[in-house]
Image (cartoon, rainbow, N blue to C red; front, side, top):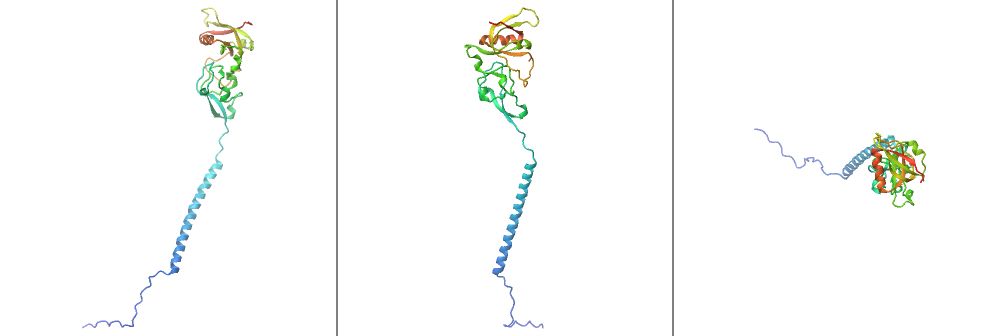
Length: 233
């Protein structure tokens, strides 16, 4: 028969681990947590600084945008003899080497008259338009641009001369007729080198005529060969 183990005496002590958190351990845990937070924030800050440095480096290496200048262009196609309104023109930035001599602002162009057909986007200059002052002392008259195929004949004309405009059949099937007689020459524009188009040639001369005569000249300029005769009247 087995002998039971002896009962523990009252003097025998069992060691139980102390599970209470001491203050020193609590402060150590807090210090470690704070240190981890600081390290994390440092890493985030370092990443942000690195990204900013990359952006600044790209900005420093990227070339600066090319210089531009503002000019005034036609907003849409304009017929010869058009009196410009604010809706006919707009400003546009272009390279400096594309700015022609005589470029003007929209405010300077409003109220002026085009000396010839103008394409949308064409840069407008003082040579492509006429001032309303040209018709001072000519009541009831309009400034009528007329393109004469014989540029040499226009070289003989001066502002203030009076001329007859003749229209001849290019095929010679009919004699020449007088479209207008004794018209006052109010301007001989300098030709623009920035405008090209089909059928252009000769020289332009601007005459003071009635609105009806301006229509007749426009029609004759399409179907007939125009020429000038200095009338001296």
